[in-house]
Length: 205
Image (cartoon, rainbow, N blue to C red; front, top):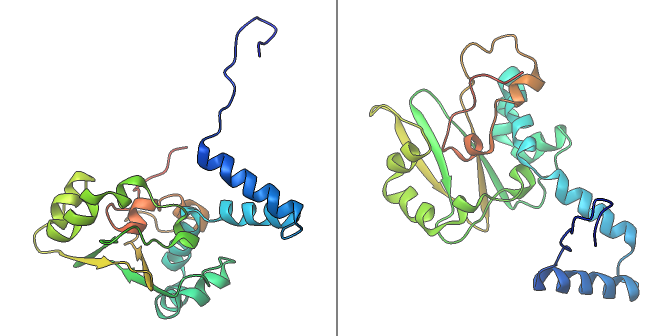
């Protein structure tokens, strides 16, 4: 296929897994097991699951102490307050960082991850290197992410399982007093919710 200038554009080639998924979808639609509305609803649901959900939770917790306590005591209910569906997580725990303690999340067996809150896990989270070294040398792993911690700060590593998922509630960056909830949420990164970095200290214009 070429454009008006005569340039050739490569055709998009689907992988074997993608072709199989489309074939299954088409068969389910043909048999009436699913409708097109069902498919679109599920697509929208999956797309809504991203680190932005976790950032919303943290930003609200930073400005609302009562919500922060509810988030720690009953994370699923706190999620529901912000329109985030965390019901698919069996047990959900929020780990609050402090000036003395830092939390870090790993899944040593596979890649268990709070997808409704953070979306898809990054490739490094699923790697054998991270899964092994986070337990054996957490400070070394943190340094590789650019996080240098004084020796007097305790690092606690939490191992996710099929039954329990974690997110980290990081310490609010100094100098953000009076910021809006929306701007605070922009400081919260996926990696800070896993515990390997701090939130951003500023946002670009």
